[in-house]
Length: 75
Image 1 (tube, helix red, strand yellow):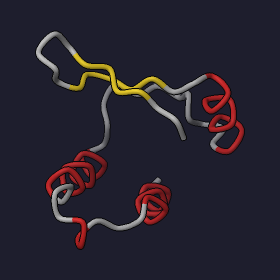
Image 2 (spheres, rainbow, N blue to C red; image 1 turned 45 degrees about the vertical axis):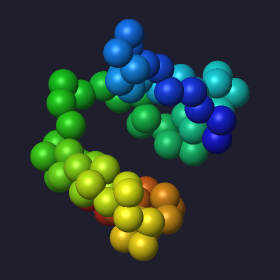
Image 3 (cartoon, rainbow, N blue to C red; image 1 turned 120 degrees about the vertical axis):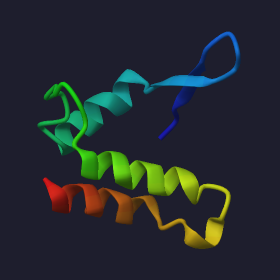
Image 4 (tube, rainbow, N blue to C red; image 1 turned 30 degrees about the vertical axis):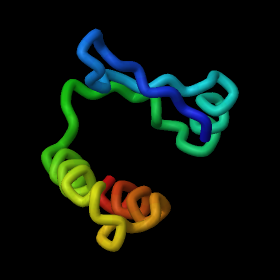
């Protein structure tokens, strides 16, 4: 997937741009992807924090497919 990181004036990442073709494909694969919620559940925040902590240690990072499986298992 070709994404672009959106950064603020200080160079901090603030968002992600996904080309529309890829967004449409994601929506077809995950029909509930557009469902908005006020906040992420704590388990998702914890999982993201864990991956961010491990980002500089490639031996600890699992393939993205494993991340998706973990997310799907909790839903």
